[in-house]
Amino acid sequence: MDETSEFEAVAITEDQFVPWPRIAAVAAMVAFSLPTFITGLEVYEALSPVSAALALLVGSIIIFVIGALMGAIGARTHMSSYLLVRVAFGDTGAGLVNIAFAISLLGWFGININLFADASGQLSKDVFGLDLPSLFWIVIASFCMTFTTLVGFKAINLLATAMVPVLAIVTGLLIYTALDTQSLAEFFTSDHTGELSFGYGVSAVVGAIIIGAIILPDITRFARHWSGAVYTALIAYVVVQLIVMGAAALAGGATGMTDILEIMLNMGLGLGAFLIVIAGSWVLNSLNLYSAVLSMKATFPKLPTVMLTIGMGLIGILAGVLNLLDHFVTFLFYLSIIFVPVAGVILIDALFVRPKAYVIETLSNNANFNPAGFVSWLVGATAAILMSEGLIPSPTSMAAMDAAILTGLLYALLILLRRFRPEAEALE
Image 1 (cartoon, rainbow, N blue to C red):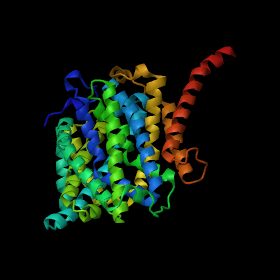
Image 2: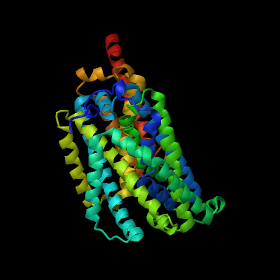
Image 3: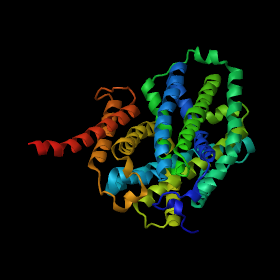
Image 4: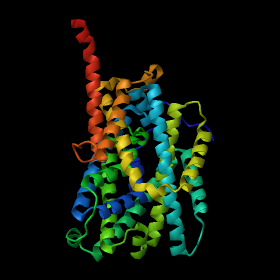
């Protein structure tokens, strides 16, 4: 298969533009995936019904704001998130950030391979009477997702566009069945209590999709106008994601069960669950691998795309075998802390500090390192982790928000100090 320009360190051209509703379909498919259902259920289990609903809403709004801004920058520049990182952090700094992104995306790839294999094995046995080993599903899933990634965004888009209406119907049936068992009023007045904080719940919601919001430019760069990116983020994060997580919470409250697949089987939605597992995981993990390849190509442009994609797909199989699912919630929590600061630096830099620098021509004579951006990222993430552990006070009680606010303020402050220093020296 030939190298395709969409994987190269170049901006998308006009002949590659895609109507924004098709881009929104891809983003919505990520929200229809199994991890989003699991997150909604786990937030419900961790909090009271009212607190869980508020955490889902606040978390979705935070993700929308981050995704809309990042996506709009991607649509305006027609550059991938990893090229934006190169402009913001410099070539060397971006190399470290993009490698970290690639590792995280492969971790997500492994988690979703776990989910796919476990869920497919359980559902194939319960729904179709087929008892197949987990490794079979891991290999099949990795092959299909790697092949889709090799074809590129067009294949991911076609799959998502075809499956969104089907998964919307399945989610609607889940909500209808849950409300038929327990009314909305009964759900909110139940005596269910949780042990975790509201801030932790919001951070779990943010962590569930934060990488998707930060790397939204990878797909919104195909949009003709930045407004299409805002519509995409609104539909994916405020509409679809909130409905999907809410549906899982309602189903958990109605059944008292803690496993989303058991819940759907119990409600007679076994085939629907199978569709969500297959279609949702396929699109989500193809996007994970697609973005991981983009990150590595942005850092190591001479690496061949086909070999890089196949190699990372094989690494994904290893990540699946390692069973990262055991640490799912903890992984999501700390992921939000580590990666929100990256968006903070890019947003401040692209919107306020150097908006004219965010063009593809900048990369031909790009800075090697942006100390202010890199220091802000490290300090913001470190401080937020200390806050989440209770070692220092937290302004918002939400580690993800702490990371974003601290990093943005610190980066703006460092830039101001750098700009005023020559004037101060001239006055001496």
